[in-house]
Length: 98
Image 1 (cartoon, rainbow, N blue to C red):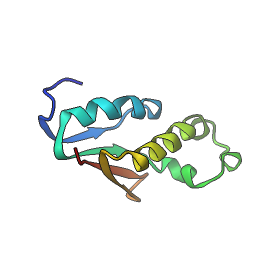
Image 2 (cartoon, rainbow, N blue to C red; image 1 turned 30 degrees about the vertical axis):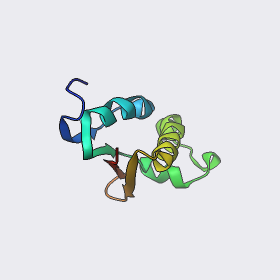
Image 3 (spheres, rainbow, N blue to C red; image 1 turned 60 degrees about the vertical axis):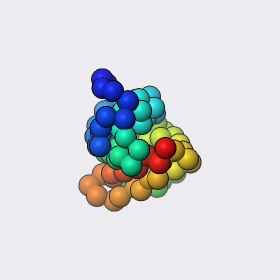
């Protein structure tokens, strides 16, 4: 990720789910105050609403905990106003507040 701090209006993140938390800090710096960071697949096949024991698919199970951790982190991050949309496999929009 390259760019001057606060130089983007919008950043779109679609990566390995275990990297979402790692990307959150640099993308927040890149996006200007009032700008949006979008993360895809944050419902992770609906597995984030299920207990860990209910998830049986190997790939889904492998990355589920990363998505749950990311969703919890973003929901509690005071620097952003976030919304998880049930579009496709989930889309989280984070608006940078400061």
